[in-house]
Length: 363
Image 1 (cartoon, rainbow, N blue to C red):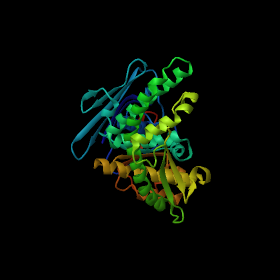
Image 2 (image 1 turned 90 degrees about the horizontal axis):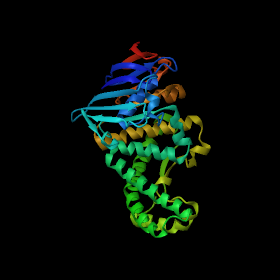
Image 3 (image 1 turned 30 degrees about the vertical axis):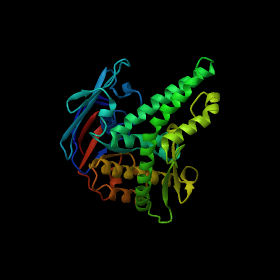
Image 4 (image 1 turned 135 degrees about the horizontal axis):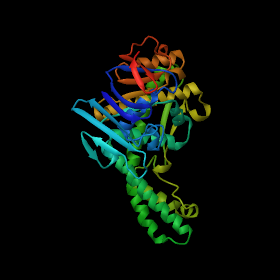
């Protein structure tokens, strides 16, 4: 893989070849290590893992920035790129194999990554939207069609909610609700179907990873899909019925109270909610297990192993968990950041790079 940056974050310019195996980026906090991982994430998903504001990624004083990556895959060489603009009226440009593409979904799947950062603890410990985002980003990389299904659902949901708000001001026509309910039920079905299947896969895979990294056989990690349609055998009909039943409450609250936008993943350890009963170490092991499972799900879907990006993760783990995690990385191209190269223990990276304020040199 080869990464190029122009005026991205702290980098005026960067050309960085990344060999197979583990690349360790070492340097002080604030040196720009995470910026490299963020650029790769942007190439894979068209968005940062740290900010929703594009101009935050543009180097101070500049009007635009660009990231470009070339990756060799089994079928051919894939090239992707993203150009961002400081002016809000200018939309980001996305390039795939030399051509500008008009939709973000066309970027998905050409280059895939799984990223673990300290903020990922929120996936296990935080609110349901964090877990939905975890699922949605994985599934969008697995199958670009999912990305469009989710977009369709969210667009119809927005329209239904707008009607409910208008009705609250005595301006909307209640006779339009059944039509929006029908559209929303149809849009919900592919989203729920993909999510339910994905959670089943993640559950089966995560148990094994947790047992290996955690090293305690008595602790059993389990993931379960939770939502309006979690046990439905007829997704469209059951969603339509749920919307009809919730209609009086939705009109009162002026928002849609049922559907995949309220989905969650129950994360339990030996039957207990990890958000309530799990320690920080157990929660970190759980999300690492989920991220490693994500690699396998993407691998099964695409026949290619995604990049693994580990942002300052090793220092958060005790020595035994750290060594067991690193044992899992021998077959995955990995980029990791660390302030202390000794965190790698006995693992020999393919390359170690020193990062200092906008420059990267061999360590």
